[in-house]
Amino acid sequence: MTVFLVGAGPGDPGLMTVRARDLIAAADVILYDRLIPPGALDGARADAELVYVGKIGGGPQMPQEEIDRLLIQYGTGPRTVVRLKGGDPFVFGRGGEEAQVLRAAGIPFEIVPAVTSGIAAPAYAGIPVTHRDYASGVAFVTGHEDGSMDWEALARFPGTLVFYMGVKALPRIADRLVAGGRSADEPVAVVERGTLPGQKTVVSTLSSVVEDAAGIRAPAITLVGPVAGLRSEIAWLEQRPLFGKTVAVTRARAQASALAARLRELGATTVEAPAIRTQPLDVTLPAPRDYDLLCVTSPAGAEYLFTHLRDARDLAGVTVAAIGPGTARELRARGVEPDVVPERAVAEGLIEALAELSFERVLIVRAREGRDVLPDALRERAEVDVVALYETVAEPLSDETREAAGKADYLLFTSGSSVRFFAEAGGSLTGPKLVSIGPATSDVLREHGAEPDLEADPHTPDGLIAALVADS
Ligand code: SAH
View 1 (cartoon, protein in one colour):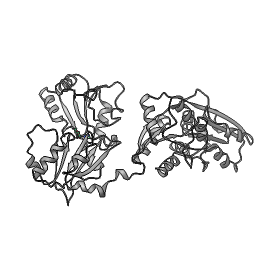
View 2 (view 1 turned 180 degrees about the vertical axis):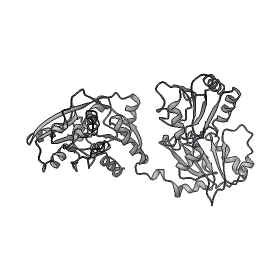
View 3 (view 1 turned 120 degrees about the horizontal axis):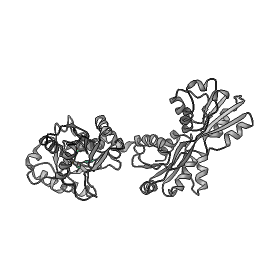
View 4 (view 1 turned 45 degrees about the horizontal axis):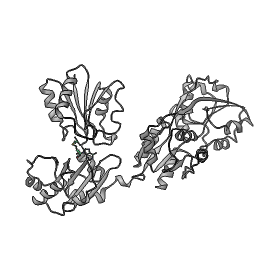
Protein backbone atom coordinates (compact mmCIF):
# COMPACT_ATOMS: atom_id res chain seq x y z
CA MET A 1 0.00 0.00 0.00
CA THR A 2 0.95 3.65 -0.22
CA VAL A 3 3.51 4.98 2.25
CA PHE A 4 2.96 8.61 3.22
CA LEU A 5 6.11 10.53 4.16
CA VAL A 6 4.54 13.15 6.39
CA GLY A 7 6.00 16.21 8.12
CA ALA A 8 4.56 16.93 11.58
CA GLY A 9 5.92 20.48 11.86
CA PRO A 10 8.35 21.95 14.37
CA GLY A 11 6.59 21.12 17.65
CA ASP A 12 3.55 23.31 18.27
CA PRO A 13 0.67 20.89 17.53
CA GLY A 14 -1.26 23.80 16.02
CA LEU A 15 1.31 23.98 13.23
CA MET A 16 0.54 20.49 11.91
CA THR A 17 -1.16 20.53 8.53
CA VAL A 18 -4.73 19.38 8.00
CA ARG A 19 -3.36 16.75 5.59
CA ALA A 20 -1.00 15.39 8.26
CA ARG A 21 -3.84 15.13 10.76
CA ASP A 22 -6.14 13.44 8.26
CA LEU A 23 -3.50 10.87 7.33
CA ILE A 24 -2.65 10.14 10.98
CA ALA A 25 -6.35 9.56 11.64
CA ALA A 26 -6.60 7.15 8.71
CA ALA A 27 -3.30 5.23 9.06
CA ASP A 28 -3.05 1.53 9.88
CA VAL A 29 0.64 1.85 10.78
CA ILE A 30 2.57 4.93 11.91
CA LEU A 31 6.38 4.90 12.01
CA TYR A 32 7.31 7.98 14.03
CA ASP A 33 10.37 9.94 15.13
CA ARG A 34 11.25 11.47 18.45
CA LEU A 35 10.83 15.13 17.45
CA ILE A 36 7.13 15.09 16.64
CA PRO A 37 4.73 17.48 18.39
CA PRO A 38 3.25 16.43 21.74
CA GLY A 39 -0.08 14.74 21.14
CA ALA A 40 0.60 14.34 17.41
CA LEU A 41 -0.58 10.72 17.61
CA ASP A 42 -3.67 11.44 19.71
CA GLY A 43 -5.79 11.38 16.58
CA ALA A 44 -4.53 7.96 15.47
CA ARG A 45 -7.01 5.11 15.39
CA ALA A 46 -7.14 3.01 18.55
CA ASP A 47 -6.22 -0.08 16.51
CA ALA A 48 -3.38 1.60 14.58
CA GLU A 49 0.07 0.11 15.08
CA LEU A 50 2.46 2.79 16.38
CA VAL A 51 6.13 2.05 15.77
CA TYR A 52 8.79 4.26 17.32
CA VAL A 53 11.87 4.60 15.13
CA GLY A 54 13.64 7.48 16.88
CA LYS A 55 16.48 7.65 19.34
CA ILE A 56 16.49 4.67 21.64
CA GLY A 57 16.10 5.86 25.26
CA GLY A 58 17.85 9.14 24.47
CA GLY A 59 20.77 7.09 23.13
CA PRO A 60 21.67 6.38 19.53
CA GLN A 61 19.21 6.83 16.69
CA MET A 62 17.73 3.62 15.27
CA PRO A 63 19.98 2.86 12.26
CA GLN A 64 18.60 4.15 8.96
CA GLU A 65 18.94 0.68 7.39
CA GLU A 66 16.58 -0.65 10.04
CA ILE A 67 14.05 2.12 9.32
CA ASP A 68 14.34 1.43 5.58
CA ARG A 69 13.74 -2.26 6.23
CA LEU A 70 10.59 -1.48 8.26
CA LEU A 71 9.35 0.89 5.53
CA ILE A 72 9.67 -1.86 2.94
CA GLN A 73 8.21 -4.50 5.23
CA TYR A 74 5.10 -2.45 6.06
CA GLY A 75 4.93 -0.80 2.63
CA THR A 76 4.64 -4.13 0.82
CA GLY A 77 1.85 -5.21 3.16
CA PRO A 78 -1.84 -4.41 2.79
CA ARG A 79 -1.92 -1.59 5.31
CA THR A 80 -1.69 2.19 4.93
CA VAL A 81 1.60 3.46 6.35
CA VAL A 82 2.40 6.94 7.62
CA ARG A 83 6.06 7.73 8.16
CA LEU A 84 5.85 10.73 10.50
CA LYS A 85 8.82 13.07 10.88
CA GLY A 86 9.54 16.26 12.76
CA GLY A 87 9.47 19.46 10.70
CA ASP A 88 9.43 19.00 6.94
CA PRO A 89 10.25 15.52 5.63
CA PHE A 90 12.53 16.81 2.86
CA VAL A 91 14.55 19.26 4.99
CA PHE A 92 17.30 17.31 6.77
CA GLY A 93 14.74 14.65 7.49
CA ARG A 94 16.08 11.87 5.24
CA GLY A 95 12.73 11.99 3.47
CA GLY A 96 14.50 12.09 0.13
CA GLU A 97 16.54 9.02 0.97
CA GLU A 98 13.48 7.12 2.17
CA ALA A 99 11.55 8.05 -0.97
CA GLN A 100 14.41 6.61 -3.04
CA VAL A 101 14.31 3.39 -1.04
CA LEU A 102 10.55 3.10 -1.58
CA ARG A 103 10.81 3.81 -5.31
CA ALA A 104 13.53 1.18 -5.67
CA ALA A 105 11.30 -1.32 -3.89
CA GLY A 106 8.37 -0.44 -6.18
CA ILE A 107 6.27 0.85 -3.28
CA PRO A 108 4.01 3.83 -4.07
CA PHE A 109 4.46 6.88 -1.83
CA GLU A 110 3.25 10.43 -1.31
CA ILE A 111 5.08 13.36 0.30
CA VAL A 112 3.36 15.72 2.73
CA PRO A 113 5.50 18.84 3.27
CA ALA A 114 5.31 20.77 6.52
CA VAL A 115 6.49 23.81 8.43
CA THR A 116 10.23 23.41 8.93
CA SER A 117 11.89 24.32 12.23
CA GLY A 118 14.43 26.52 10.42
CA ILE A 119 11.68 28.98 9.58
CA ALA A 120 9.27 28.35 12.46
CA ALA A 121 11.70 28.57 15.39
CA PRO A 122 13.04 31.97 14.23
CA ALA A 123 9.46 33.13 13.52
CA TYR A 124 8.39 32.26 17.08
CA ALA A 125 11.45 34.19 18.28
CA GLY A 126 10.38 37.25 16.29
CA ILE A 127 12.95 36.81 13.51
CA PRO A 128 11.95 36.84 9.84
CA VAL A 129 14.41 34.75 7.80
CA THR A 130 14.15 37.22 4.91
CA HIS A 131 13.51 40.97 4.97
CA ARG A 132 13.57 43.56 2.19
CA ASP A 133 16.18 45.66 3.99
CA TYR A 134 18.37 42.95 5.53
CA ALA A 135 18.28 39.61 3.74
CA SER A 136 17.31 38.80 0.18
CA GLY A 137 18.00 35.10 0.56
CA VAL A 138 18.14 32.30 3.08
CA ALA A 139 20.26 29.15 3.12
CA PHE A 140 19.42 26.03 5.12
CA VAL A 141 22.61 24.38 6.26
CA THR A 142 23.44 21.32 8.31
CA GLY A 143 25.75 21.92 11.27
CA HIS A 144 26.42 18.22 11.34
CA GLU A 145 28.71 18.14 8.33
CA ASP A 146 31.48 15.73 7.47
CA GLY A 147 34.19 18.19 6.47
CA SER A 148 33.05 18.70 2.90
CA MET A 149 31.43 22.09 3.60
CA ASP A 150 32.76 25.01 1.53
CA TRP A 151 32.85 27.47 4.45
CA GLU A 152 34.19 30.33 2.36
CA ALA A 153 31.34 30.05 -0.10
CA LEU A 154 28.92 29.86 2.79
CA ALA A 155 30.44 32.93 4.45
CA ARG A 156 30.00 34.83 1.17
CA PHE A 157 26.33 33.81 0.81
CA PRO A 158 24.42 37.10 0.57
CA GLY A 159 21.67 36.35 3.04
CA THR A 160 20.58 34.58 6.21
CA LEU A 161 22.23 31.28 7.19
CA VAL A 162 20.05 28.84 9.10
CA PHE A 163 21.87 25.93 10.73
CA TYR A 164 20.11 22.73 11.80
CA MET A 165 21.79 20.27 14.16
CA GLY A 166 24.33 22.93 15.03
CA VAL A 167 24.51 23.00 18.84
CA LYS A 168 27.72 21.00 19.21
CA ALA A 169 29.22 22.57 16.11
CA LEU A 170 28.56 26.15 17.23
CA PRO A 171 32.25 27.00 17.90
CA ARG A 172 33.24 25.72 14.46
CA ILE A 173 30.35 27.52 12.72
CA ALA A 174 31.28 30.84 14.33
CA ASP A 175 35.01 30.39 13.63
CA ARG A 176 34.74 29.39 10.01
CA LEU A 177 32.24 32.10 9.10
CA VAL A 178 34.46 34.82 10.60
CA ALA A 179 37.51 33.24 8.92
CA GLY A 180 35.53 33.25 5.66
CA GLY A 181 34.86 36.98 5.93
CA ARG A 182 31.66 37.47 7.91
CA SER A 183 31.92 40.28 10.47
CA ALA A 184 32.57 39.18 14.05
CA ASP A 185 29.77 41.58 14.99
CA GLU A 186 27.21 39.88 12.79
CA PRO A 187 24.04 39.07 14.78
CA VAL A 188 23.37 35.43 15.63
CA ALA A 189 20.27 33.95 17.22
CA VAL A 190 20.04 30.48 18.74
CA VAL A 191 16.50 29.18 19.33
CA GLU A 192 16.07 26.09 21.49
CA ARG A 193 12.82 24.07 21.39
CA GLY A 194 11.28 26.51 18.93
CA THR A 195 7.44 26.68 19.00
CA LEU A 196 7.35 24.35 22.03
CA PRO A 197 6.64 25.24 25.67
CA GLY A 198 9.92 26.40 27.16
CA GLN A 199 11.24 27.89 23.90
CA LYS A 200 14.48 29.72 24.67
CA THR A 201 16.24 32.29 22.52
CA VAL A 202 19.72 33.80 22.79
CA VAL A 203 20.71 36.70 20.55
CA SER A 204 24.42 37.42 20.27
CA THR A 205 27.16 37.98 17.67
CA LEU A 206 29.53 35.63 15.86
CA SER A 207 32.30 36.59 18.27
CA SER A 208 30.33 36.02 21.49
CA VAL A 209 27.72 33.40 20.65
CA VAL A 210 29.72 30.41 21.88
CA GLU A 211 29.87 31.90 25.34
CA ASP A 212 26.36 33.40 25.35
CA ALA A 213 24.68 30.21 24.10
CA ALA A 214 26.58 27.85 26.41
CA GLY A 215 23.33 26.86 28.14
CA ILE A 216 21.52 25.93 24.92
CA ARG A 217 20.65 22.28 24.30
CA ALA A 218 19.40 20.48 21.19
CA PRO A 219 17.11 20.72 19.39
CA ALA A 220 18.04 24.24 18.40
CA ILE A 221 18.26 26.37 15.29
CA THR A 222 21.22 28.71 14.86
CA LEU A 223 20.53 31.69 12.63
CA VAL A 224 23.27 33.99 11.36
CA GLY A 225 22.46 37.33 9.75
CA PRO A 226 21.32 40.89 10.37
CA VAL A 227 17.68 39.75 10.63
CA ALA A 228 18.56 38.26 14.04
CA GLY A 229 18.74 41.84 15.30
CA LEU A 230 15.05 42.34 14.47
CA ARG A 231 14.07 40.19 17.44
CA SER A 232 14.32 43.22 19.73
CA GLU A 233 11.61 44.85 17.63
CA ILE A 234 9.43 41.90 16.59
CA ALA A 235 9.52 39.44 19.54
CA TRP A 236 5.89 38.56 20.27
CA LEU A 237 5.75 35.22 22.06
CA GLU A 238 7.11 36.66 25.29
CA GLN A 239 4.56 39.48 25.22
CA ARG A 240 1.58 37.24 25.79
CA PRO A 241 0.15 37.75 29.27
CA LEU A 242 0.82 34.27 30.66
CA PHE A 243 4.17 33.66 28.93
CA GLY A 244 6.58 31.63 31.04
CA LYS A 245 3.88 30.48 33.46
CA THR A 246 2.84 26.87 33.90
CA VAL A 247 -0.77 26.35 34.85
CA ALA A 248 -2.23 23.02 35.98
CA VAL A 249 -5.95 22.42 35.39
CA THR A 250 -7.70 19.87 37.58
CA ARG A 251 -11.06 19.88 35.82
CA ALA A 252 -12.65 16.85 34.18
CA ARG A 253 -10.89 16.29 30.88
CA ALA A 254 -13.60 17.46 28.50
CA GLN A 255 -13.82 20.88 30.14
CA ALA A 256 -10.17 21.04 31.17
CA SER A 257 -9.07 20.86 27.56
CA ALA A 258 -11.11 23.88 26.56
CA LEU A 259 -9.81 25.90 29.51
CA ALA A 260 -6.24 24.71 28.90
CA ALA A 261 -6.48 25.72 25.24
CA ARG A 262 -7.51 29.23 26.25
CA LEU A 263 -4.61 29.44 28.71
CA ARG A 264 -2.17 28.34 26.02
CA GLU A 265 -3.49 31.05 23.71
CA LEU A 266 -2.41 33.50 26.40
CA GLY A 267 1.08 31.99 26.40
CA ALA A 268 0.87 29.63 29.37
CA THR A 269 2.27 26.13 29.42
CA THR A 270 -0.50 23.86 30.64
CA VAL A 271 -0.65 20.63 32.59
CA GLU A 272 -3.93 18.75 32.43
CA ALA A 273 -4.42 16.93 35.70
CA PRO A 274 -8.05 15.80 35.65
CA ALA A 275 -8.66 14.02 38.93
CA ILE A 276 -12.36 13.78 38.18
CA ARG A 277 -14.66 12.76 35.41
CA THR A 278 -18.42 12.75 35.16
CA GLN A 279 -20.57 9.76 34.43
CA PRO A 280 -24.31 9.61 33.82
CA LEU A 281 -26.62 8.08 36.41
CA ASP A 282 -29.37 5.73 35.40
CA VAL A 283 -32.36 7.93 36.25
CA THR A 284 -35.70 8.84 34.73
CA LEU A 285 -36.15 12.54 34.30
CA PRO A 286 -39.71 13.72 35.05
CA ALA A 287 -41.17 15.73 32.15
CA PRO A 288 -39.80 19.29 32.49
CA ARG A 289 -43.04 20.58 30.94
CA ASP A 290 -44.83 19.69 34.18
CA TYR A 291 -42.73 22.31 36.02
CA ASP A 292 -42.66 26.06 35.69
CA LEU A 293 -38.97 26.49 36.53
CA LEU A 294 -36.00 24.33 35.52
CA CYS A 295 -32.64 25.05 37.18
CA VAL A 296 -29.46 23.74 35.58
CA THR A 297 -26.51 24.05 37.94
CA SER A 298 -23.47 23.00 35.88
CA PRO A 299 -22.30 22.73 32.28
CA ALA A 300 -22.21 18.93 32.59
CA GLY A 301 -25.79 19.06 33.93
CA ALA A 302 -26.84 20.88 30.76
CA GLU A 303 -25.11 18.27 28.65
CA TYR A 304 -26.72 15.30 30.41
CA LEU A 305 -30.14 17.00 30.51
CA PHE A 306 -30.39 16.74 26.74
CA THR A 307 -29.73 13.01 26.75
CA HIS A 308 -33.11 12.73 28.56
CA LEU A 309 -35.09 14.97 26.22
CA ARG A 310 -36.78 13.92 23.01
CA ASP A 311 -36.48 17.39 21.51
CA ALA A 312 -36.84 21.10 22.35
CA ARG A 313 -40.61 20.76 22.81
CA ASP A 314 -39.95 18.96 26.10
CA LEU A 315 -38.91 22.35 27.46
CA ALA A 316 -41.91 24.25 26.06
CA GLY A 317 -43.26 26.82 28.49
CA VAL A 318 -40.68 26.20 31.21
CA THR A 319 -38.58 29.04 32.58
CA VAL A 320 -34.96 27.91 32.34
CA ALA A 321 -32.34 29.15 34.82
CA ALA A 322 -28.60 28.52 34.40
CA ILE A 323 -26.21 28.92 37.30
CA GLY A 324 -23.56 30.73 35.28
CA PRO A 325 -22.22 31.62 31.86
CA GLY A 326 -20.61 28.19 31.24
CA THR A 327 -23.91 26.42 31.83
CA ALA A 328 -25.70 29.07 29.76
CA ARG A 329 -23.26 28.42 26.92
CA GLU A 330 -23.95 24.68 26.98
CA LEU A 331 -27.70 25.36 26.88
CA ARG A 332 -27.35 27.82 24.02
CA ALA A 333 -25.21 25.32 22.11
CA ARG A 334 -28.30 23.07 22.24
CA GLY A 335 -30.71 25.75 21.10
CA VAL A 336 -32.06 26.88 24.47
CA GLU A 337 -31.63 30.48 25.59
CA PRO A 338 -31.74 30.53 29.41
CA ASP A 339 -34.23 33.02 30.89
CA VAL A 340 -32.20 33.59 34.05
CA VAL A 341 -28.39 33.75 34.41
CA PRO A 342 -27.23 35.34 37.68
CA GLU A 343 -24.38 37.80 37.75
CA ARG A 344 -22.66 35.79 40.49
CA ALA A 345 -22.25 32.24 39.24
CA VAL A 346 -22.99 30.49 42.55
CA ALA A 347 -26.13 29.00 44.11
CA GLU A 348 -26.58 32.12 46.24
CA GLY A 349 -26.44 34.28 43.10
CA LEU A 350 -29.11 32.17 41.43
CA ILE A 351 -31.36 32.39 44.51
CA GLU A 352 -31.07 36.18 44.36
CA ALA A 353 -31.76 36.26 40.65
CA LEU A 354 -34.91 34.17 41.17
CA ALA A 355 -36.22 36.34 44.03
CA GLU A 356 -38.56 38.39 41.85
CA LEU A 357 -40.04 35.47 39.93
CA SER A 358 -42.99 33.41 41.02
CA PHE A 359 -43.24 29.67 40.45
CA GLU A 360 -44.92 26.70 42.03
CA ARG A 361 -43.06 23.64 40.80
CA VAL A 362 -39.30 23.61 40.38
CA LEU A 363 -37.09 20.96 38.82
CA ILE A 364 -33.37 21.09 39.60
CA VAL A 365 -30.97 18.94 37.57
CA ARG A 366 -27.47 18.58 38.92
CA ALA A 367 -24.63 16.31 40.04
CA ARG A 368 -25.31 13.70 42.72
CA GLU A 369 -22.93 15.46 45.08
CA GLY A 370 -24.29 18.98 44.45
CA ARG A 371 -24.84 21.42 47.32
CA ASP A 372 -28.30 21.77 48.88
CA VAL A 373 -28.24 25.56 49.16
CA LEU A 374 -30.45 26.08 46.10
CA PRO A 375 -33.10 23.39 46.76
CA ASP A 376 -33.34 24.37 50.43
CA ALA A 377 -33.90 28.03 49.58
CA LEU A 378 -36.45 27.31 46.86
CA ARG A 379 -38.39 24.84 49.03
CA GLU A 380 -39.47 27.79 51.16
CA ARG A 381 -41.37 29.11 48.16
CA ALA A 382 -42.31 26.15 45.98
CA GLU A 383 -42.45 22.42 45.49
CA VAL A 384 -38.97 21.31 44.46
CA ASP A 385 -37.77 18.12 42.80
CA VAL A 386 -34.03 17.48 42.63
CA VAL A 387 -32.78 15.00 40.04
CA ALA A 388 -29.13 13.96 39.96
CA LEU A 389 -28.30 13.25 36.33
CA TYR A 390 -24.65 12.38 36.84
CA GLU A 391 -21.96 11.89 39.40
CA THR A 392 -18.35 12.91 39.47
CA VAL A 393 -15.94 10.08 40.11
CA ALA A 394 -12.24 9.95 40.80
CA GLU A 395 -9.83 9.68 37.90
CA PRO A 396 -6.40 8.36 38.88
CA LEU A 397 -3.46 10.69 38.23
CA SER A 398 -0.24 9.29 36.79
CA ASP A 399 2.99 9.93 38.72
CA GLU A 400 4.16 12.20 35.92
CA THR A 401 1.00 14.28 35.95
CA ARG A 402 1.06 14.59 39.73
CA GLU A 403 4.67 15.70 39.63
CA ALA A 404 4.09 18.16 36.77
CA ALA A 405 1.10 19.66 38.61
CA GLY A 406 3.22 20.03 41.76
CA LYS A 407 5.83 22.01 39.83
CA ALA A 408 3.33 24.33 38.13
CA ASP A 409 3.17 28.03 38.99
CA TYR A 410 -0.61 27.86 39.39
CA LEU A 411 -3.02 25.08 40.27
CA LEU A 412 -6.59 25.76 39.18
CA PHE A 413 -9.70 24.41 40.87
CA THR A 414 -13.10 24.89 39.30
CA SER A 415 -15.19 22.98 41.84
CA GLY A 416 -15.09 21.61 45.35
CA SER A 417 -15.16 18.07 44.00
CA SER A 418 -12.07 18.70 41.89
CA VAL A 419 -10.26 19.72 45.11
CA ARG A 420 -11.40 16.57 46.89
CA PHE A 421 -10.53 14.20 44.10
CA PHE A 422 -7.22 15.91 43.38
CA ALA A 423 -6.19 15.50 47.01
CA GLU A 424 -7.47 11.91 47.05
CA ALA A 425 -5.42 11.14 43.94
CA GLY A 426 -2.33 12.17 45.85
CA GLY A 427 -2.05 15.66 44.34
CA SER A 428 -0.23 18.17 46.51
CA LEU A 429 -1.81 21.47 47.53
CA THR A 430 1.52 23.03 48.43
CA GLY A 431 3.96 24.58 46.00
CA PRO A 432 1.92 26.17 43.22
CA LYS A 433 -0.31 29.17 43.86
CA LEU A 434 -3.83 27.86 44.41
CA VAL A 435 -6.51 29.48 42.29
CA SER A 436 -10.15 28.88 43.19
CA ILE A 437 -13.14 29.61 40.98
CA GLY A 438 -15.24 30.90 43.86
CA PRO A 439 -16.12 30.81 47.56
CA ALA A 440 -17.56 27.28 47.62
CA THR A 441 -14.40 25.85 46.08
CA SER A 442 -12.26 28.00 48.40
CA ASP A 443 -14.09 26.52 51.41
CA VAL A 444 -13.23 23.01 50.27
CA LEU A 445 -9.59 24.04 49.85
CA ARG A 446 -9.63 25.33 53.43
CA GLU A 447 -11.18 22.04 54.60
CA HIS A 448 -8.03 20.46 53.13
CA GLY A 449 -5.83 22.84 55.05
CA ALA A 450 -4.93 25.03 52.09
CA GLU A 451 -5.65 28.73 51.72
CA PRO A 452 -6.42 29.80 48.12
CA ASP A 453 -3.98 32.41 46.83
CA LEU A 454 -6.44 33.76 44.29
CA GLU A 455 -10.22 33.57 44.06
CA ALA A 456 -11.95 34.32 40.76
CA ASP A 457 -14.54 37.07 40.60
CA PRO A 458 -16.79 36.57 38.68
CA HIS A 459 -16.84 32.88 39.63
CA THR A 460 -16.43 31.64 36.07
CA PRO A 461 -13.64 30.33 33.84
CA ASP A 462 -13.34 33.88 32.44
CA GLY A 463 -12.96 35.14 35.99
CA LEU A 464 -10.27 32.52 36.64
CA ILE A 465 -8.32 33.59 33.59
CA ALA A 466 -8.65 37.26 34.51
CA ALA A 467 -7.35 36.51 38.02
CA LEU A 468 -4.32 34.70 36.58
CA VAL A 469 -3.53 37.47 34.11
CA ALA A 470 -3.83 40.09 36.86
CA ASP A 471 -1.49 38.11 39.12
CA SER A 472 1.25 37.30 36.62
N1 SAH B 1 13.01 17.86 9.24
C1 SAH B 1 13.25 18.74 10.35
C2 SAH B 1 14.71 18.82 10.71
C3 SAH B 1 15.28 17.53 11.20
S1 SAH B 1 16.97 17.64 11.66
C4 SAH B 1 12.67 20.12 10.05
O1 SAH B 1 12.26 20.37 8.92
O2 SAH B 1 12.58 20.92 10.97
C5 SAH B 1 16.86 17.92 13.40
C6 SAH B 1 17.23 19.34 13.71
O3 SAH B 1 16.12 20.18 13.45
C7 SAH B 1 17.58 19.61 15.14
O4 SAH B 1 18.92 19.28 15.40
C8 SAH B 1 17.35 21.09 15.23
O5 SAH B 1 18.42 21.81 14.65
C9 SAH B 1 16.15 21.26 14.33
N2 SAH B 1 14.90 21.29 15.08
C10 SAH B 1 13.90 20.41 15.03
N3 SAH B 1 12.89 20.80 15.84
C11 SAH B 1 13.27 21.96 16.40
C12 SAH B 1 12.67 22.87 17.30
N4 SAH B 1 11.45 22.66 17.80
N5 SAH B 1 13.36 23.98 17.65
C13 SAH B 1 14.60 24.22 17.16
N6 SAH B 1 15.20 23.39 16.31
C14 SAH B 1 14.56 22.27 15.92
